[in-house]
Length: 94
Image (cartoon, rainbow, N blue to C red):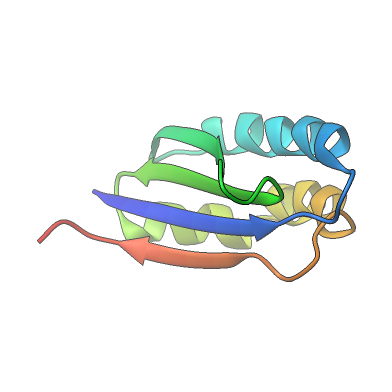
């Protein structure tokens, strides 16, 4: 199993719009083979910083979702709300 850590920096004042778009993106990945679970978190110290952690069966499952047309379509709804490109980190247990 792997975890995928996604960090996003929102533009000020777009919390509500981001919330709707992020939920749609999470619903989309829940339909993908290999998806196990996920959570979306808000940084207490930096209110425009978001962290998403998802758990996948393996790296290939994540890559299939990452490159999918569905993710690209849903991600387009988030890109305009971000101050910078999202940062994605793949993590494996030791």
